[in-house]
Each structure stands twice: as structure tokens, then as C-alpha cells.
Length: 435
Image (cartoon, rainbow, N blue to C red; front, side, top):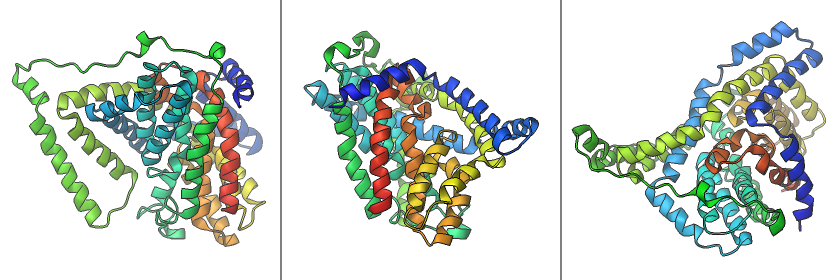
């Protein structure tokens, strides 16, 4: 149904979308020029903002990198991989493969964005070994699952405003996840996307003559290396007892934490996934082998995050982000503020592809507006969260780990994602305004 509509988008993106590293360099220059032209800042001021802000997200970058790495390690544990290989035997056609991969990626991304990216990519590779399906759309289907992450359990904004000591607590207090992640309108929106996103991907399935099939030799299943331990150090590396003892300590802490009323935040999610990864890998050597692969997938994030921190510094210190947000907020009322916050977040996300970093930029604008207009603060915050997730469909930054695992380039999948952007944008807008 959407095959013909998606074809020109795929060709357009394939021709003009550069590598994500080139993309961030171009964005950096665009923001610098915009700050000079629209905020009347001198070039040297803008360069100073950029240089001083370049390392401003190191703590957050480490949190985000750990989300990816521990998610990768958990997803590549023998038990999880066995489950993925079993799931890969279920689809018998290309259509079924697309729908299954999309649904699994949506579910896993809702649980944890890093886990979702990795699980989806590994499942897609497993399916590609068994089913003849367009490999570009298969991987794009994985990334489309990322659309729901900010409405899920690892959403940076809803977790931030639920965490004691966050920077906005003084103005809005703490907002429970029951009003954001687990609110009726958010769960309804997530449910609709769980239906629509797989169907859209299915409807974009190219005809056989237009499809791209991957060479099986490029996606051979990794085989866990085993060897006889002879040295004491090797025996420690292959000690299940050591892994289980540490994992058991982690479980005790998690039980203690949640029993005493601890909430979900980025750090506890990372700790939870790390604990289960240690246990499910059974030995430190298996864990370390997976870690080495996980770090490779995070290479693009490591080098590009500082550039986005520099962009964010220009956006915030020059006033560009505030000007963009205020432009949308100025035309809002209590009912439409979540929608305009969503749109403004979508624009800002192109330059600040970090949910937590974006909230730091937009909260000082949207929160006072929400209080002034007597709007639903929780819904406004989720508007920003969904805007951040929405334009990821054309912002290739978070596709880097998937592309690294799949062996593709951003231009191979972004044409399909552009179609998802247009359709999901309508759905999210309606949900934020009328649900």
C-alpha cells in the first residue's frame, strides 16, 4: 500500500543523507551561523560557547553509553540469544518478519531504549539468516521501534521529573510516573503505535525486484569461543561462582532499593540490566567478550556526543533554543501547549538529540508557560518527551548502534523512517491534544 509512496523517500535519503558524523559537523556550522544571524552574537562568542560546552555532557554521556552497553551485553547473553534465535524461526514470510521485528523492537525499546536497539538488531540478523526479506527495511523496522522509547520505562524526561533533587523540582515538585509513563493517554498512545508502526513497515515492503538482500556470509552467527583454562587467571575468568556472587549482591541491593520505595531512574535501570547481564553470561570471560563487541557499537556515540554537547551549549547560551521554544509556546493555550511543546521539541531534537539534555534546554521555557496557562504539567513534559523521540526518525544519531551491528549506513534505512515520521507525527499530535 505504501510501497510506491516510500520509494521516492528512500531514493531521496539515499542520495542526500550524509554519514551521521558529517551530519553533526554540518549541524554544528548551521547552529553557529544561526546564533550569529538571529541572536546577534559575535562569531568569537559562539565559538566560545561551543568550545566551553564541548565536554558539558560527559556524565550524561557516560549514562547513555552504559544504557547501550549493558543493554547490548544483556541482549547478547546465551539465554537471551537462544530466545532470539527461537523467535527468528517463527516468521515464514517477509511480511511476517517485518511485523515481528517491529513489534519486538517496540516492546524492548519501551522497556529500555538501549536494550530495544540491540535486541531488535540481533533479532533482525537472526531472521535475515532464515527469511528472504529486504534487509534495509528489516533494520529500519528495528529503528522504528525506537519511536516509543521516551514514553517507556527508560524515558529520560519522565524519569528525571520523578527523581528527587532534579533541577525542576523547586518549580513543579516531583511528578510520579503514574502521571507520565503510566498515564492513560500515554499508554493509549503507546498502544496505538504498537499497532500502526508494524503495519506501516509492512505496507512499505518493496517488491522482490526492488529489494536489497544481505549476503549470508556477512551475518554469520557469532560462535562463543571456549577453551580449557590452565592458568589461575584463566580459571578466574571462567568462574561461574565469581559471577554469581557478584550478581547475587546486585540482586540483594535491587531488592533492598525497591523494598524501601526506590523509583525507576537511569542509574537503577543500568544497575538492573548490568546485574542480570552478569548472571546470564555465567562467566566473566563471556561477559567481557560481549563487552568488547558492545564498545564497538558505541564508538559513534563516544565521538559524536561532545559535538552535540557543543551544539547544545550554543543553543542554550545564545538563546536559540529559548527563541524556538518561545515561538511555539507564544501561540499556545492550556489545551494546545502539549502539542506545541511536542513540535518545538521535535525541532530542538535535531540539534540536541538527548532527552535529558533537551529537557534542560526546554524546561525553563515550557514549565513557566504551563503554570501561567494552568496547563497539565505532566502532559506538557510528555509532549517534549514525545517530540524528542519523534524526530529521531530522521536524526540518525541513535541509529548508530543498530547500523554498527547490522553493517549498514544511515542512508540505507532513513527513507523508510521518514514515512514513519510523517504518520506517527499525526498520531502523537492527536493524542497529546485530544486524548
